[in-house]
Amino acid sequence: MFNEQIRELRQNAGINQAELARALGVTKQSVSNWENDNIMPSVEMLIKIAGYFNVTTDYLLGLSSTHVLLTDGLTEPQISHLQLLIKDLTEK
Image (cartoon, rainbow, N blue to C red; front, side):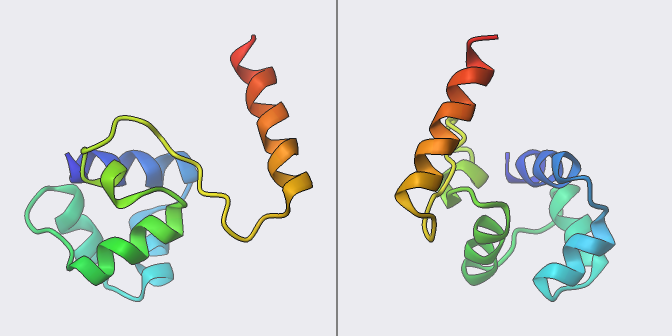
């Protein structure tokens, strides 16, 4: 499940494996191994990946099917704006 989640998040972000690896401070081979389900990242790296994509570790591990948008660091007006955007998108 993790391999599918990280590949989908990476592709949706429009970045390649090398770009993700650079952002996380790992090798492209590490990202490739995660996406091919050869290895799992360490707990510390899992947390870093979740932070990079702004999702929960539960989402990455397939324990939650809900894609959570973390709003830490945003102001209340920014959060309200996001909520309106999401509402507009789901009504279409």
